[in-house]
Amino acid sequence: MKSKNYVTFFGMLVLVCQLYAESNRFSMGINLGDLFSNYDLGSEMANTLYSQIQYPVLYMSLTESKIKIEPEFSYWRYSDDSNNGMYKSTMHYSVIHLGIGLSPIISQTHKTTTYIGAKIGLDKLYFENKSNYSYGSETSISSRTDLLIGPYLGIEYMLRDKLSLGTEFQIMTTILGNEDNTGSSNAENYDNKSGYFINSEALLFLKWHF
Image (cartoon, one colour):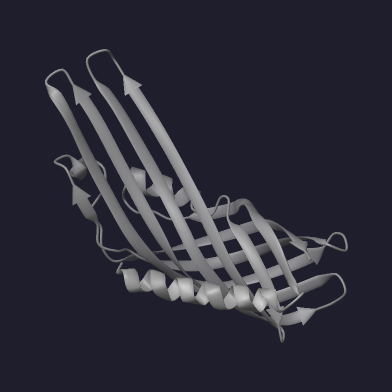
């Protein structure tokens, strides 16, 4: 994914932050995890990364004229070391997620808010494998940036004056980006899979209202 996409997202976040600064109708929250998820990339490593992308996710939520504006961010990293005396391997997996959602409020009472909208986001996947042998060493790196877009339906319930519990059902389409590979052993790490996949998720989250 070209750098102009990051510039566009940065500009959107700057605009949202400016709105936040001028409003007192905002909240911050964290995703507590998936109630269920469904996806298959045909790659054990890629499936492992995408199974973690929604946990945890940090949210900021601003309500303006019955429309919720919600930037979100997530970072996940995992490392694994193996050593049998003659062979040592260190693997690093990471995912950075940046997105934003827009959702009109379709129903609101004193305790509950129901909304429906759409999200767009970017996922940056990174894999690095460093191997040391008796005869030398080898490093392989794979990275990819994917585009996510899709609709969602959510409901939020006020537990206290400032604290709410909510759930969202999402159907997200992930358009897979081109992989950037270096080293000689990447065929074992990333499947060079192109196209897209669709996954459904039911998310649970807590929010604090300011």
